[in-house]
Length: 267
Ligand SMILES: NC(=O)c1ccc[n+]([C@@H]2O[C@H](COP(=O)([O-])OP(=O)(O)OC[C@H]3O[C@@H](n4cnc5c(N)ncnc54)[C@H](O)[C@@H]3O)[C@@H](O)[C@H]2O)c1
Image 1 (tube, rainbow, N blue to C red):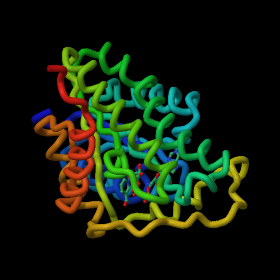
Image 2: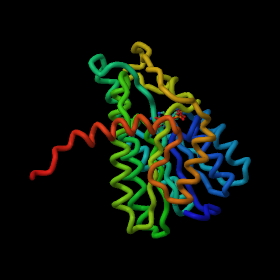
Image 3: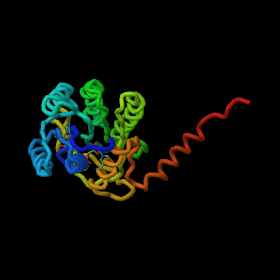
Image 4: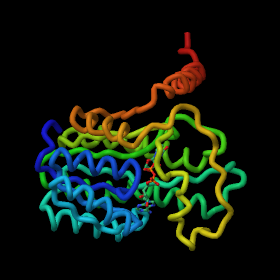
């Protein structure tokens, strides 16, 4: 999408970190915003900041793991702005710890937010974006953890690998509809992701022990740096949005291991 001015975007997980940075960058480009999050106060604050940049902003408290809530978010966005051109399925949480020690509730929470949240976004918005016939762009926030497995990050890896696979296929499926797809795969970003437990629902073990978070390799960059890459990806229709040069050698090692695992062609 070359010219974003006057377009309309929906961003989940918009109250903090990467989502908030994308909201402000899109506002600076003249994009009207529907912002969604489970933290209503932080959401209102982010909406106020974006609105101060001169665009219309609609904050809608939304739990992305709840399909009915996501359908209501789509209704609100389409009713208010008449169209949705950019969808950022960004809300996410981090759960750490060895897989053999994972609680069932850890799986439910992480899959609910990180994977069902993205699926719900696709279900609730994409058919309507196709129907409106104006093209568009979808940004799914995965992680470098969607391309490389890290010890102690198995649940998160599982959800983010799925988001990469979904996004790669979605890009192919939507090519003829003029809707581009990007999948964002950062390494460390200075956000509140390591305080994800703040948003764990009580029914999914909110009183459980604090989750150990493994040390990540590479730099911790700012959400603004990440958002700048996302803006470029929307404007030039890039599928993979990679933010850390440090990730390349890890990817090369994984790709090399898979390359060597293929059997030779029969003689
Ligand atoms: N920070 C990193 O190092 C990093 C690296 C790779 C990928 N990511 C991904 O980036 C995305 C954004 O995370 P962030 O780093 O900005 O963290 P963050 O905690 O600062 O922001 C995440 C936002 O999502 C919201 N949220 C949580 N559960 C929700 C739910 N059920 N419904 C709606 N909103 C919900 C939170 O309230 C918060 O505002 C996530 O998908 C995360 O997995 C982050």
